[in-house]
Image (cartoon, rainbow, N blue to C red; front, side, top):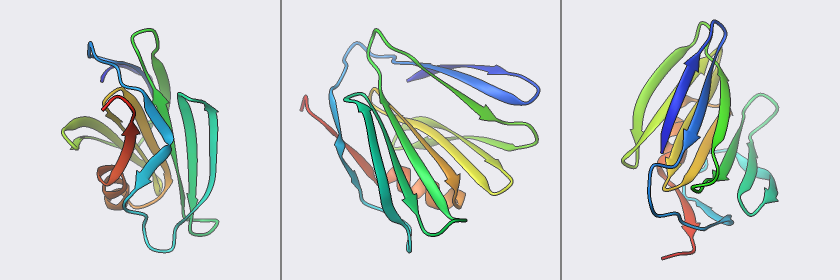
Length: 144
C-alpha cells in the first residue's frame, strides 16, 4: 500500500492506493481478533458495504478504540486526515507492512494495511497495545 502525505499546520492528510497487480476479496465480518486487551469488549460492528467496516471496542467511557477497514482495489483509493499538530509521529512495521502511528494527548492512531485492506485503529489506548492488536489481527481473504 502506498500513500501520499500532505502536511498542513494542524493535520496530515493521507491518500492511500494499492501498489499491487493482485487484489484480494476480504470477508471483513470474519476478521479474527487474536488479541483484545484485558477488560475490553467488542461492543459494535457496522458494515457500510462489503468493502467498508468499523468495529468498536470498549473497556469503559475513557478507554476505547475503533478499527476501520477499507478494501481497496485498482479503481479505489482512500483518504484519511489525522490531527498531527503537536503530536508524536512514528513510522514502524506491522507484519512486514509499513505503518504510521500518531500519538497525541493520550489518543493513538495507527494506520497499516493487510494486502489491499487499509486498516486504521484509533482511540484512547496505549500505543504498545495498539501495535499488538494490529500484529495479531487476521483478515479473512476469500481468494486463497
